[in-house]
Length: 104
Image 1 (cartoon, rainbow, N blue to C red):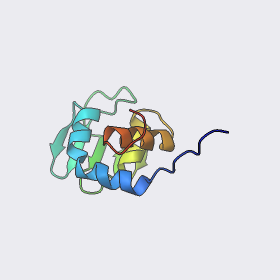
Image 2 (image 1 turned 45 degrees about the horizontal axis):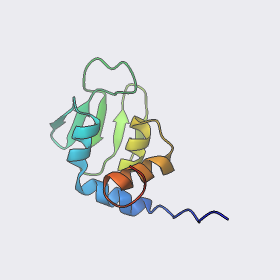
Image 3 (image 1 turned 45 degrees about the vertical axis):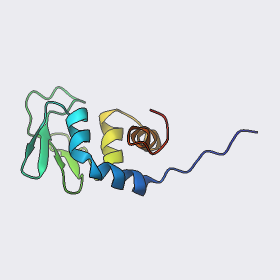
């Protein structure tokens, strides 16, 4: 019999990630830059030539690619989108990155 899978606390992971969001954005979208309360970058998921259509609000982590309509509202959904992961896998990896457990 296998061990039970621990429940991921998405709210806790997202709250913790929000505390270090500028560092996460610099790591995940290194060619971006802060512009007011937004991180403006090129979308690494498509052939985006210049920053501007992909933005992340640094106050609430609402993010959007205005060219494609892809959007979300928290660090887990952003990680899932950027790294082409399912929400649970993104939460697990983000938790590990933040020292909350999970796999790195």
